[in-house]
Structures are given as C-alpha cells and as structure tokens.
Image 1 (tube, rainbow, N blue to C red):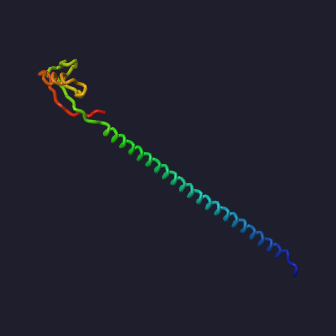
Image 2 (image 1 turned 45 degrees about the vertical axis):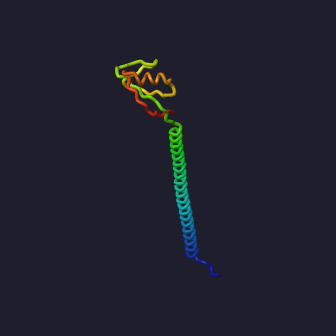
Length: 141
C-alpha cells in the first residue's frame, strides 16, 4: 500500500469525523423519533384508558339509576297493592263545628271507617240534620 500524504490523511480523518458526526446525529434523531412514538402511543393508551373508565363509570351509574327506578316502581306498586278500600262515612257539619257520638265534626269533614262505628252510631250520624253524611269507599294504607 502506498504511503499517504499528510493532506490525504487529513482528508480521511475529516471524512471519518464527518461520518461519525452523521451517525451520531442519525442516532439522536432515531432516539428522538422513538421517544416521540412512545409518547404518542402512551398518550393514545391513556386516552383509551380514560375513555374506558368513563364508559365504565357511566355504565355503573346507568345500572344504579335503573335499579333505583325499578325499586321505586316496585315500592309504589307494593304500596298501591297494600292499600285497600274500606266502607266509610265522610262526615261534614252544617254549622262551623258540631259534636255527635263523641266526635267533633267541622265543615271540612273527615272520613271514618264503618268498622270503627257501632250500628247505633252510624244510624245516629246519618239521622243528624246538622251533619252531611256520605257513604264512601276510602283507601287505607
């Protein structure tokens, strides 16, 4: 092999240095690109995880709301089924206030179930001209 001149040696060293610099820059760029890709993937995963969590929470809330609504409806239906109609008298007084059979009646009136009155009390209340007596079916809890 022929001996290299100092200019040729300097040119070879310069070329080697430029190649090394280019490789370093390429490696840095590759590392930056890989980091950016990893950050993008991580951000996408985080967004997907947050969306999945929000959907899970929404589904749980919907299920809880539906359960609460079903329980409310069931309670209303049970309450309606538990109520029964009983024969009653709705009694109002003609004057401001009037007493008969140990009870005080007003113009607003109120209902009394027949099963808490004796036959004699029912007859006396219906016969009293100072009372307006109406036979009704009252809902009791």
